[in-house]
Image (cartoon, rainbow, N blue to C red; front, side):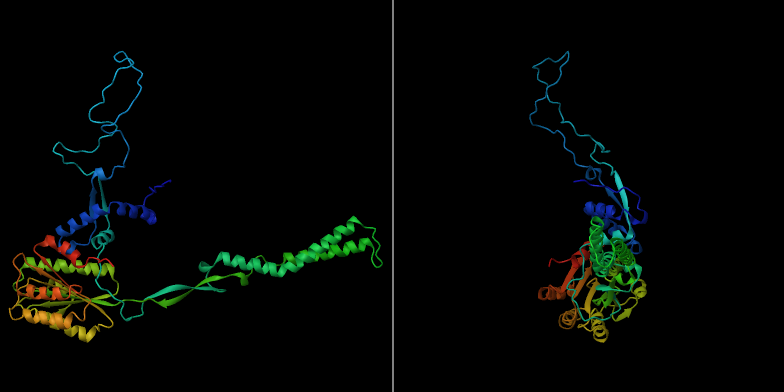
Length: 428
């Protein structure tokens, strides 16, 4: 099999296939680099491209060469030191291989190949194998999206949709239909003319042989002229591919982002929560075109806010988690019918809550919210022991593990692994 490697520059994206093949080959290196980059970047710098280094040992092409051991018999010409029958010892350390790389005596080496992935490629690897769980086809909310489907052929259209093969096939059929009888007549007349020229003395009571030849030649000339005037291709032969516009099914989904901004949430906790929600927001924006996001901040009271206020407001206070859950339920009842929307929610909190409020949260979540949503994810941001809210939510996890998930984030390094666990694509 012959492999052709296209080494042209990427003008007009001509080398996109080669780059895609390269990214697929070194997929595990790139995914590791992306995961490391997410952990060290700031909140506002999380979606740009990344430099990826690949160790030289993984770039080398595999080759066959002589290694240690084995038995070989080789005939050498000999010299003044060796004569026929002498045995030459095998050199130590094997042979054939070519040493490369800049490994230092302590075993550490330099990466010999580095390249940069684009922003889109970075996000592709960042959210690879992730999805919104339990996404179901709901009632079509909007019909703004359309797609074009083939619907046969038509005799009118634009040149770009001309079907050349079908048009030529139609022209050939028309020429056969119009000229078939004339060609048969022409062949008969040509045969008669040849016969008459071969036997010019056959008696004819009405015309002389020369008159008959002249008449046949005139008729043959007229038929040939008629055949030449049949157009090779006519406007009626043209056929154009026809496409009809049909509404494209679109699944509507909404994601509720619930963030605890109470006084117990330190600035570190809030930064971790923001980074988690920014990851979630990028994931939704990258993979789903038709999804709405509802931002809810809460301390003792909850409020629906816009994106700017959700991430950058400094308002704080006490903690009543149930206020956020009640507000979410109100918004769902008012704007997002479960029969038409896939409803998702992600909640981030340090778990600190009024003791008598945590059982209320568990009851609201289990009885009023989970029956409406496709998936509810809770992350508790604390390096310490869990509090009452965590244990209330554990009861819900035991009852409904398909629609509810919970994880703990102890430090910024846990954000990306936890995010992947919560939204990892499940096997069908």
